[in-house]
Every structure is written in C-alpha cells, then in structure tokens.
Length: 625
Image 1 (tube, rainbow, N blue to C red):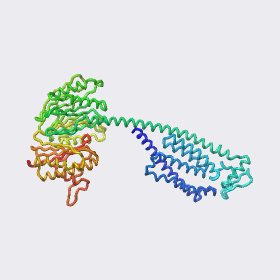
Image 2: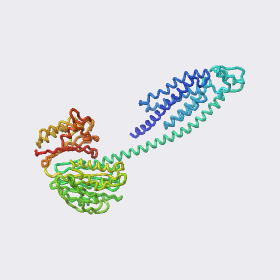
Image 3: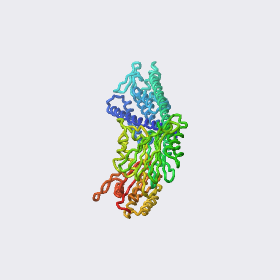
Image 4: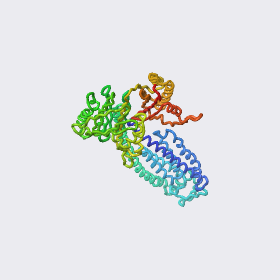
C-alpha cells in the first residue's frame, strides 16, 4: 500500500511534467510555423539549397510537434515511457533545426537538457545529456554540408544570388551544395586550413562544454527536487499513517459509546458527540441498572486528543463497572474517582454529571462533579437544574458530591451538555452562553428530541459561523415518557426484498391499536415512499440496515414513526413543500412523494447524528381511537 502511494505521487508528477512538455512542443511548433511562412515568402534570405531543405523539412516537423496534443485527454500521459517520447521528439526536431541552422539552433540543445528539470529525475537528465552530445555531433556534421551558410564553419564568402562560395586562399569558386562544400573543405585542408579540426575542436567542443556545465547544474537541481519529492512523500506517508491511526482511534472511541438514539416505552435517549479533533475527551453513557432504572452519565475530560480520549474511555469503563443496583449517583462517582485517580501521573481530570432515573415514577436522583448544570422541562418551559456542584474527578483520592432528587413529569426531558456548547465562540470571541441555549429550547414546542437536538446544533452553527471549533461538543437528552405507551422496534436489511416486511410491521402495529383504515392506507404510502428512498438513494445499492421504531400514546392519541439508517447524509424532508395547483405537481425529484408525506403526518423532523440519519414523523389523532 505504501509503495503504491509513493508510485502514484511520482506518476502524478510525471503526468504533470508530460502535460507541460506537450504544451511546450505545441508552442514550439507554432513558432516554427511562423518561421516557415517567413522563409516561404522569402522574408529571410537563404541560400537556394538551405531554402529547399527548410521548406521540405519544416512541415513534417510541425506536424510531429503538434501530435502529442492528441494524447492530452488520454491516460498515455501517465505512462512511464511517455516522457522519453516527448523528449526524443523534441531532440529530433532540434536536431533537424541544428542541421538547417548550425549556428543558431544550438540553443535548442540547452533547452532539451533544461526541460528535464520537470521530471525530478537525474536518470532522465543524464540520458538526455548523452543523447544531446551524440546527436549534436552528427547534426553539426550534416549541418556543415546541408545547413545555412556559417562563416565559422566555412571560412569563404557566400554569394547568395548565385549560390557560390569563394575564398582568397583558393583560386576558384565552389557551388553551394553538399558536393561543392566537400570539395571546398578538402581544398582548404590542402591549403593549410583544416576546417574539420576547427569545426569539432572549437565549434563542437565549446558547445559541448557549455552543455556539460548546464547538465551539472540541471542534474543537481533534479537530485535536489527528487530528494524533496521523496521527503514530501515520506512526510505525507507518516501523516496519512498518523491520520489513519487517529481515525481508527476515533472509531474505537465512538464504538465505545452506546447507541446515539435508543428508546423503550418509558424512556427515550438521544446523544451526540462532535470532537474538536479526530478524537476528543467528551463522553456520555447510559446503562440499564435493572428493568426499572437507567443510569445516565455525561463528562468532559481536561485536554484534547489521544490522552483525553484514553482518559475518557477509562472513565466510561469505570462507570459501567460500578453502575449497579443499590448505589446512589454520588457513591458511583466516588468509585469512578478512585479508579481513574490510580496512575493519573499527568493530573488529568474529568467533570461528570450522573443521574439515575426510575422509569416507573419519573424520580431522578443525581450528583454533579464539577459539570455544567443540566436543563429540564418540556414544551417551551425549560429551566436550569442548579444544585450542589462537587469536585472534579481524578484529581484527589476522594470525590465530594451530594445526591439530589427531582421528579420528572410525563413528557419532560433532562438535557445534559458539555461546555463546548455554552462556550462555543464566534469570530468576535463572544460565547454562545447559557441564555442563548435556554432561548433555543424555549422558543417553541418541539415534536421530538431529534428536532430539539437539531435546533441546538443549528443555533450553535449559526452563532459560530466560520470560527474554528475549539472544544468538543456533546449533548444528551433523556425524555421521560410517563403514561401508557405502546412500543415496538425492529431492524431490517436495507434491500427491496424487505420492503413488504417493513410495511407489514407498520400495518400490524396500526391494526393492533385500531388506527382508522384511511390512515393505515396513507401510512403504507408514507412508509413506501420514505423506505424506498433510503434504499435507492441513501444506500444506493450498498449494504446497510434500517431500524423502524413505532410508538403510540393512547392518552394523547399520538403516533410516532422513527426511521434510523447508516446511509450517507440524506434529508428527505429538505425537498421543498411545493403546493399542487390545478394540474401542476412538484417539479423536484421525490417532491410529490414527500409533499404527500408532509400532508399525511402532523409533524416531521430530521437530524444527522454521529453518522446516522434519524427521521421522526408524528401523527396526532383528533379523537380517541
């Protein structure tokens, strides 16, 4: 896996370099096309032979240089050998130009070596360097006989009108042709002017020396950039490994926590934790001590990151060990304190609020160990539950907290939270605060705890806006139902074959509690629409499950349908509630179905909590059933 990531980094770099080379070749072809037309219309004066060579070789060269553009949209740019293709093509074209223009095209060889810096590869640079030296030798040799006249190569004078070369050392005139130039150079050797030696010793050697100096520079740059790329890959590898380990730690931490949304006929519990880092120090937990009592815990560990997460897990483990029948909250806190105090060399601590709820009577016995005061109430009548605040856990050998008691009325909730909620800051440095939290809870009556939590989350997000999250955010709500509730829940696989079973569960529940036939038929439409959307669009063919939770209160004539899934974030209620006028229907995909759902049900609510989509629908019957 690591080698594959390293290779992909090199492939990406080579692909980008090949793309730049392709554009460069196209740019070079465009310049050659311009020069070609200038030569064609004789803006530049050339000897007849050089003109013929230029006009005959430029068109195929221009076509060759444009050819790599056809590979820009293909995968060939990532092929290992593609770089050699574009570099070789460039060298070939420079070679032809060097034959035509021996004096001026020498700069092209320098460009060929310089372009290898794109690849961060000393091997590519070395290969190009040796090919350039060999190619330049042969191209210069051909250029002496076929290229543009150069007095440094041929010491005589060129008469461009008749294409002849003359020299005062020799008594005759030579035609400007390959054969004429050869005869001319041979006669110069006989006259004591060996141009062959001067060409290769002075002309070629001087350019080769310049290219060697350039190669040393570019190769050093390639080595350095290759080293930097290796270092970057190594650092990224360590970062990815660390990130992966933190993600695993996060999964372990979240899996340590109980279900984010659980319920029975007496109690409903909803919790959410949003860590400021990959892992955090906030915690929540609840355990059923016996059939009639549930213990609830929320806490906030000092610090952030992995140490806080480990201390958090140790606290939860202690809570589960000591939350047994016959103990009060303060006694459990003392035992938790004794457990986490051992070996606490870093002097970490945790604030905790622990309560035990009697499901039969609604009696809530609680103890606070330095934590934020919870909020209790219902339907716009929430208030803070302030009382004795004990000491933090983990710092001292003993914990000092006091048991207190309150009785929850049917329908009332207790909302526990960490200071990440009230101490959330906006860009101006202002705190969200307890007053804003209370205002959010009391601004209206909420259909469900899901809708209540969603409102808190949105209020905090709207207040903070783009300011970074500085602390973990956790809240937990326990709703005491009270009264008489009929309750049923079951998990199904998220496949089309289970649709009939899920709808049958809903229909059976309606039959048992004598729902009106008209509503039972409508309820089948609701279930079919929402469940099929989750299977088709939420999971999209992937494996998953759907939890159906059915609740009916005979005293208030209220029916609740809760659907929970682990699919991607998918809020079906976000489809606009477009009204139907005449023959017009909602235009959005799924708009008509969701419109019908909203018309059938009295209230609907959605939230995304710890990787789960939670959809709650409520139907209030006007008359007793």
